[in-house]
Length: 104
Image (cartoon, rainbow, N blue to C red; front, side, top):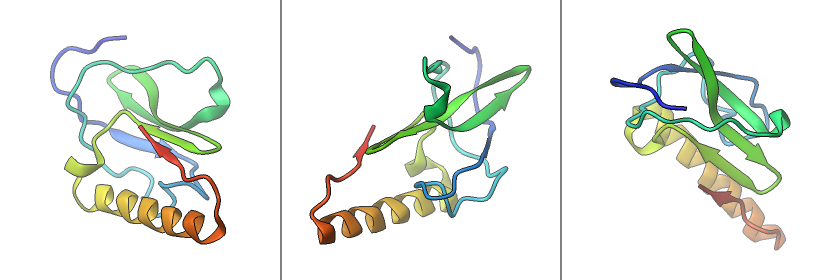
């Protein structure tokens, strides 16, 4: 799907035990592109974002995969919170010899 114009919307999700666990519902994230994905499996959707009348998957998570449509590195303090959670997650995985999550 494609949007026209600038896309900056807000995140809505239930994301306990994910990289978004410390991000508050309703935080603004930075979107620079005008496309979004529609996962075949709705169970992987971690957050949704509403832009106008369209609600779409803005992040997804599978056992060791996290992907987001927005840019954490350009999303201010909320984006840094996501990267801090990723760093902690990688430290925990390394300590237990587990497979590290893949960030897309």
